[in-house]
Length: 106
Picture 1 (cartoon, helix red, strand yellow):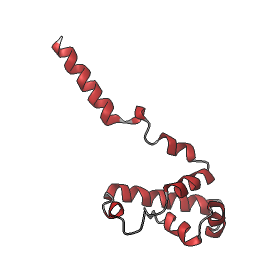
Picture 2 (cartoon, helix red, strand yellow):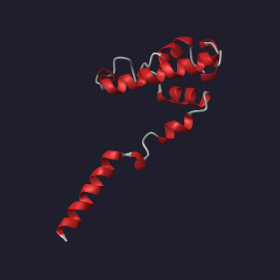
Picture 3 (cartoon, one colour):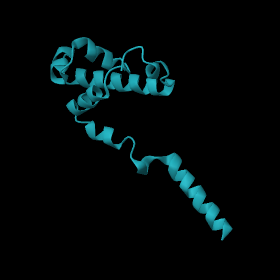
Picture 4 (cartoon, one colour):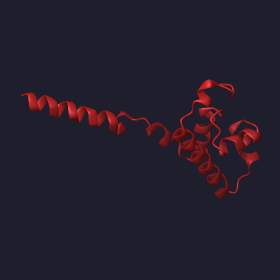
């Protein structure tokens, strides 16, 4: 996706904020491990400027790079849990409401 992509321009502020927090947390994790951006760039197979952009939460950085960075800090399993159907509270609440409505009709 190019940097001037309409999808990036329409990124909801909440999503942008979450990416900035993720990037900041990854930067903190890297620093706590006393690793340089250059080391991470080599491990991620990207350039140092890309690591810097990821750490700023740039949405144009590929999801694969974020996923690999999470793997570097042994947090990749958290990524798999983000959209689990069991955690989709909006749908669960709707299902409960539908069940209650069906019960009232009986």
